[in-house]
Length: 515
Image (cartoon, rainbow, N blue to C red; front, side):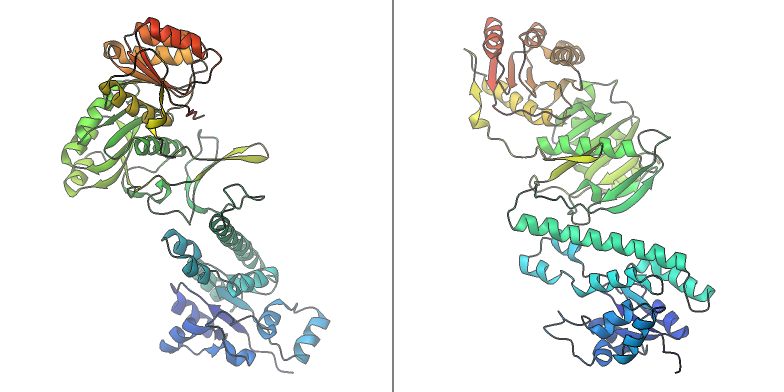
């Protein structure tokens, strides 16, 4: 019996590199079997192609939902070439071998990230594609599988170097990549469908899928490996979708600090600038211009600001760029950078400058942290808070000016690591205490950094005061009004201390721990 002609099944949604791959396969003696639009694209390029319906004797049906789901396709991929019973059954059923499968999947993740309708997203759930890839990966002992156009050049090089075949090691690596890809694809569908079904953020299984964005030089320390991964389903407003305009390679710590800075600025609102050092904001300010906001945020802690990371929820103009380049900073994140600012920022070529699309409304999202052998997951603290629910706990209510400042401080405190104390004016932090093991120490840090500016200022505490001592520190520094969640068994003593100093105190009823 003459040897069976080798066949390659090619069915792709992303046609990058398609013709180069097809020409290489033809050159090495493969017959190409293809489907729908891929077959048409190949035919239009004068590449000889066999429509899958000619192979199966069955047409594509149901608007293309069923094309490759047929024994002559899956049998050709899956049967073991060295098993006599498999070979006999293949001959008896007219099933020829398919020795290479190049398939990439419908762009489901990109579709849902674009905000498409439910029905549009449903139609982008690929059924045959993952099945073909998994079948070929399972039988990688003899079948080459390609799920990513980025691998076409290496596949062509393998064919050229090995007489039209690939090595077992190559096939195994490509098969492993397939199982990672199909697992991520299914995870994205599961997460989206779970949300659409209203099953909440924490179902009985938490499917996660992320694409490698970049390998980093190292993790938190040089002896630790590090990498950055991207959720393919995230929208352009996510930090992970940043566009890097200039600067050195980003580090693990740069990205952590950038996330903390952007989270804080977004918590306060548009036109807010945050300076972060080691995940803790050192200054937060809102102003019509970046230059003014930076000046006020820097004054909150000019020592910690050195070598910090800045996030500005607005556009960087020339004046703003001149202020930013006057200090030593590691990273700047903003929504936009105008052309004049680009020229100024270029004078500091090592400064990393990132842009991220403006977030129209706070996005519900899940935060995940690893523990030994597992994960912790929670809803992010991004919900909009109604200050009408705040209650005056003291004899004196805040003045209108104090209430504006308290509102600013309460928004800013969401980004500060607990125990968190923020001393603030109406538009800027004056001193921040965070990451302390006791609240009274955080109070001391905040008023020490604020100095004389604390007199007549307000303060926010992310959790209740367990004792009056922290409040006493604030009062002695001249703070006149405080907002805190309340709920301590010592609330009465804390309120009594505030009344004794003539302070106003609001109970928000909501805690903002950030560990």
